[in-house]
Structures are given as structure tokens and as C-alpha cells.
Image 1 (cartoon, helix red, strand yellow):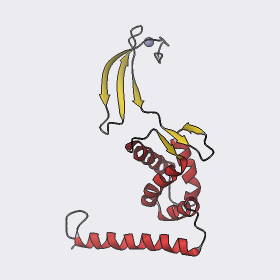
Image 2 (cartoon, protein in one colour):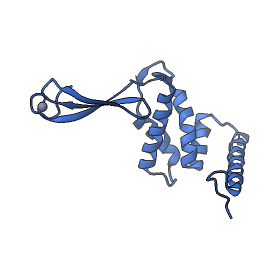
Image 3 (tube, protein in one colour):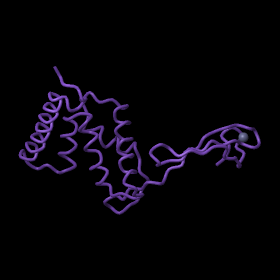
Image 4 (spheres, protein in one colour):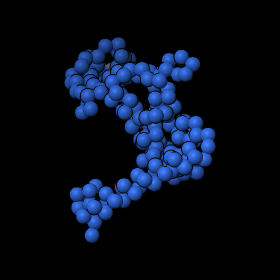
Length: 166
Ligand SMILES: [Zn+2]
């Protein structure tokens, strides 16, 4: 790539480091012409196969806009959505695949969205998993309640932080 300072088409790698998660490489570069230093980050390309068969690059922005609608009126900020989109991308990259089906993205969104806001989660799940009756909502809410009960019990036992709650 061109030097961002002087557009010189050549640069020299002076340092190169793999990220802690092993999913990207950061290279420190220097331009031999102007001496300017800059960094590049190299990651494997990630593609999404849409239901129509069209393949397009994965986009965090699209994850955010897909979830934003479910978050209307909820205390969820754009920064929260950005973190969620990052978690989704990391989860997908952890699988090691370079191409994923669009519906797998929906699946990867459910967990992080549930942690963020349960009402938004129910809205998103109802569309994504095509809830078509009150029983579907009942089942999803019952699951959330059961998990709350487990979490409260664990808290009471001090399991989560290793300390008893007196
Ligand atoms: Zn330069």
C-alpha cells in the first residue's frame, strides 16, 4: 500500500506482531522516501453468503443496523451496538471459517444481544426465529426466567465471584 504521508508506493516492515487471539497481524511500516511510520493490520477476509446466493464482505455496520431496530426505545447506545458487532465478528472468526451463511450471523447475534438487553433480544429472536405464536414467546421468556433463577442461586451460593454473599 502507498505511504499515507507522501503516497510513495513502497514501504518497509520494521516490526510485525500477532494479536493475542491469533486472528490478526499488526505490521509497523516505514516509508523509505519520507521516513514516515504507519501500521497495517492483516486479517483473513470474511465473507457472508446471503440467502440469494450473493457473497459479500462481512460488515459490522450491517450487524449494527440489523440489531438497531430491535433496540428502539431501549437503553442501548451506538457504542453498545459497536461492541456487540465486534463480539459477533470475533465469535465468527473464532470458528475459523472464511465464509458464513447470513443466518449464522443471526445466530451469533442472539447471545451477545441477550446479555445487552433482554427485551431487544426477545424482539430480535421473535423475528429471526420466526416466532408465530404466544407459546413461542412464553418459551423464550420461561428460558430467560430459568436462567435468572440459576444466576440468582449461583450468586446466593457465592459461586460466581468465589465469595459467599452474606
Ligand atoms: Zn512517505
